[in-house]
Length: 276
Length: 357
Picture: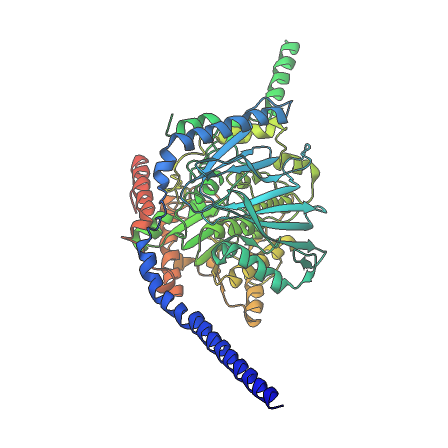
C-alpha cells in the first residue's frame, strides 16, 4: 500500500512536469507567431527595398503611330476588308469600303474603323500587344435588301469616350435593344457593359433591363446615363426614340470637312499612313 | 416644215422633262446645304445663338454684323422654305455639337405654308443633303414625307438607286472643304422696293396641326434644356400669294401665335418670347418703300437690310437676355472663325461695290 502511494505521487509529479512543459511550449509557440511576425513586418520594408522593382514601360503613342508595325498593320487589315467588300455585293463594282482613324478607347492611338457605305456592317481594329488586332465586329445588318437606308441594326460610336452602342431594331424600329460596349485595353476585345430595351407603343414607351425585367422610365434613363456618361447623354440622347444617336456617321461615303481622317477610301488611307 | 417644228418641239419637251443634272444642287450657299454642312465644322460649344427657319433667315440675319459689333456668336442654321418640323430636327442636331443659349426661330414658314401646299417637298433635298446620316436624320425624313412611299424612295434612297445617289456624288468634291468660317449668312446684293406691311391684328387662324405639333416640340425641347426661345418674323412682304387659289393669311397665324404663347405663359412656360415685328415695324429701321433694304419684290432682305435687322436683333437679344447669357466673345481665340467670317464678308461686299455697314 505504501509502495502504491509513493508510485502515485511520482506519477502525479511526472504528469505535472509534462503539463508544465506543454504549457511553456504553447506559450513559446504563441510568442513566435505573434511577436516574431511583427518583427518580420518591421524588417520586410528593408528587405523589399533591396529587391529591384521592374518599372512599367511607358508607351509613346506618337512613336507607335509612326511605326511600321502600326501603319503596315492598318493597311493590311484595310486591304483585306476592301477585298471582302467587293465580294459582298456582287452586282456592285463601286468601291464600297471606307476607313477612319479614330481614337475610341482614349489611349491616343487611333483605332481603324472599317465600314461599307451601304450600311451592312462596321468593324474596328485596335493596337494591342504590339500589333493591329483582327477586325472586331461593331454591327452587322443581317439582311440588307434594297431598303438599305433602313438598317435592322446600327451603332452609335463616340471618339475619345471608349464606349459604343450597338442597336438591334425590330418591329419597324418600335423595339430597340441597346448593347453597350467598351474596348478592353489588354485584349483589344469589346466588353459588353450591359443592355437595355425600349418598346414604343402608340402613346408611350415601356422599358426593360438586360434581363428582360420591366423597369421604369426613370431607371431606364438613369442606366443609360450611367453607361454613356453625363456629357454624351446630354448631347446625344434622343427623347423621341429613347436611345442615343451616334456621333460617327457609318453611312457617309465622303470625307466630312470637320473630321480629318474619317470616311477615307483605301487610297486616301494609304496616303495618310505615315510609314511606307 | 411642220415636221421640223414638231421635231424641235419634241426635243424641247424631252429636255424639259429630263431631271436636271445633279450639278444644280451643287454647293450653292443659299439653299441650305452649305448651312447644314458647315454646322459640323464649327468649334464645339461656340455658337451662342442659333437661327432656324427659311431662307428669310440666311438672307435676312447678318451674323457677321452680330459678331463685329456685339461679339455675339451666331449661326444661321436655315434652309429654303424650312418647315417647322425640319427646324425641330435641325435643333436636335445642332444641340449634339453646340450648347446654344438662345434659339431664334423665324415663324414665316408655318404661317405661310399649310399641309396642302403644292411645293411642300420641293426644297426638301436642300434640308437633307447637308445633314449627316443618323437616327435623327431618319426621323426627320420620315416626318417630312408623311408616309409617302414614293417620296421614301426618293429621299431615303437605297444605295442601289444610282440616280438619287448621283446628287450626293456631285457634292462630294465640296464636302471636305473647311467651312468653319461660314456662319450661314448669305448676303444678297439686289435692291427692290416693297410696300410696308399692314397686318390684320384682330382675326386669328391656326397654322396646320402638324406645324402646331412641332412648334410645341421645339418649345418643350428648349424649355427642358434651359434654352431661351426667341420667335420672330424677319421682315418680308406680307401675304404674297404662294399658290394659285390659296389666300395667304400669314398675319392671322401670327395673331394665333401671340395668343397661343400667352396661354403657355399662363401655364408656367416662360422661356419663349415672340417679337411680332409687323406690329412695330418702324422700330426695326427697315426701309420698305425706299428700296434700299430688300433684294426682291417679296421675300428677302438684301445686305443693307439684313445688316440693319441684325443690329436690331442683337440689341434686343442683349437687352432681353443680358451679357451674362450672351457674352461678348470678341478677342477670344476660340471664336476666331467669326473674325475670319467678317473679313471674308468684307471682301465680298467690296467686290460687289457695296458699302460696308
